[in-house]
Image (tube, rainbow, N blue to C red):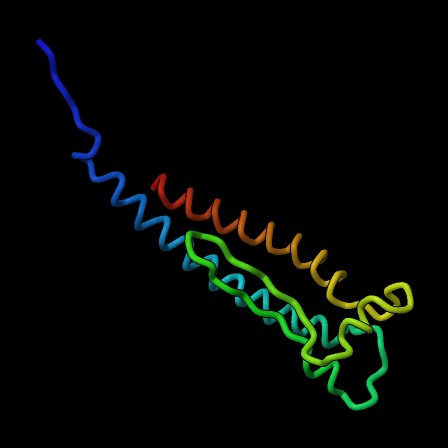
Length: 124
């Protein structure tokens, strides 16, 4: 006697797809929160003295959802001389790279915690 079982009968693939979509949305929300934090960090910790306030005001951080679970975390200057601040004088006035190093670590930690939370919820 042979008994056959089809794993699709358990609708696991549909349930996992729903969980995956929820996780991606949660990641996007978390990344946008961290993006706001990183922009505030750059504006508060810039190593230059403002003359017009434009360089500080035009610092930005944004998250772009590229689809398929890929997100881009983008830091930048909105002023034409932003590259000067970053690369001249041996990086004395850089803010993008230090912020990226700091927040890459934070993002890794936060998304790992989020993934673990999702996995724990599946066990229940």
